[in-house]
Image (cartoon, rainbow, N blue to C red; front, side):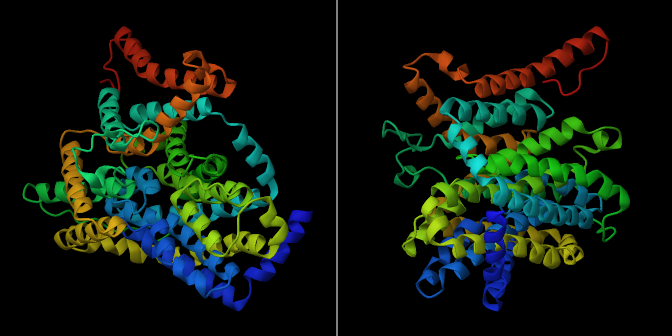
Length: 504
């Protein structure tokens, strides 16, 4: 009841005319930067940090929160329409969303993304208000062996579910893990795979990797196919979701929310893990026509991951506000903004600055409603992007991708890396290697390595420490089961005299 009363006071702060304008500005900017490949909410918040010298703290953080939520939604737009994720967390949406667009259901994919983001964001923000202390306790209880086991589960499910061939999935994952090793080893200080290039000592930014593999690789692949086939005219289709679309979307929205919020609250959880797990679960649960549509544009594959994506944003705020622990790049920039104001997130922040904290939390409800009002009516307009001639469209994608990659560090080396990764993305498409396992390997590989080393250090080299926790043991058992399932299916298929599905 105390939290509810503080939330009402937060609404009094968030609903002032000035703060409403800042919230609207934030969600609008967030959506725009989410749409542009390579320019995400973290970069936008970083560019706007100078406003902390002249804008009141509550207004600034209401705008930053709007940028965060808007960027999460905006990244789905280019994923669906152009197979080009604006954010790495939106790459899973591209798997089914772009297929829906090519079948003339772009507006439905955009609509389920918008409504799912609203539903998940609203529920997750309510959970943030009601259960933040419990989630924080759960996050603190997670040990390094648990984080390593969670990463292994993500690796195995990614390689088996997102690829028709387990071998190709694992090959793609290995490429991603190798790219993630580039840079200085955080424990030994040794340079790895840098080829003597100083700019690679800090590793390759994940934005450059995601944009290179997806955006530039897609543009090169489309350009290579244009001489072999006439340009594809993709119909926009009906404007709104039909009854069957609603019936197939609401359960994935809720399941995605249930995954996104707690995992987003975990240090290192981020938005990538829950979006991928949501897609995997929805694919496993699919029955009838939905099961046949996976790989060809299943609406569940858009609804679930997008809900998980936005729910994780609210989950990220739990450790940031309660412990001062950022679990994403955007949260880290927001922590820097707190420090600009001379504030330190943590229990004392709730006691000394309740208007700021609860005003920011209340603004999440307001920002979600604004995003729905802004984006749902604009779904047909976004869908019309598909009518732009492909040479101009993909030339623009490469241009914005190059601008976004250069803006990360203002380095020409980053541009060269971008186009090298674009060539790799083209080759992977050409030879049938899935892209998602590679990006998952890049994002989670360093975290898995660090947690593995910490767990082994705690256990003085005894590998049994990796299964000493019940959570870790269950997660590793699930990983083994995921790897064994294709082999079991192949053995059964041979006994029945059938060709195995998804065999290497």
